[in-house]
Image 1 (cartoon, rainbow, N blue to C red):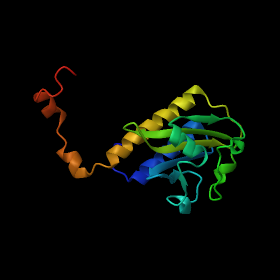
Image 2 (image 1 turned 30 degrees about the vertical axis):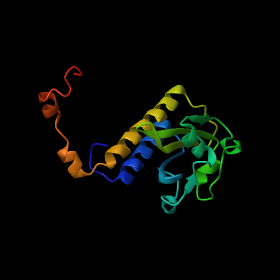
Image 3 (image 1 turned 90 degrees about the horizontal axis):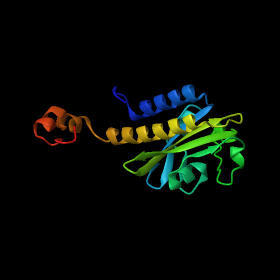
Image 4 (image 1 turned 180 degrees about the vertical axis):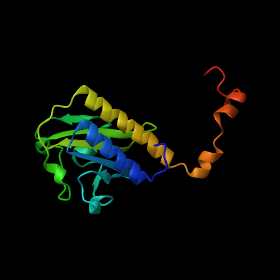
Length: 171
């Protein structure tokens, strides 16, 4: 988040880190575009699916997570869950275990992160907490990505804020 990279590169890096840390078979990040969720990063989806796979907020487990702003953890037979929706473009739709967390920015859902395992997997509290935290961090990242370089350069330095007493009593 601190080095200069495109949003796509950063999202792919987050996917790679999650795959390595959680030892999962699939990680997918969807971001909202109006009333749709758009696949924006993945370690398993073909590059042609990035930006093309879209689902409404009413579709699938991913849509449920976005609508309800809640984590979902399914340890086996995720594809049999009544909320599940398969996409022919995504091999991960046949995986057993599914963990999903909303991406939140300023109290608004702006995306969803899905993690999947081919074999049954009981998600630990630490894994669920990690994915929730990453969802919050990605939300912050998206807010920062919307700021252009000039806006960042115009931002008042902390020294100026402190000198003016703006943060008096909060430091």
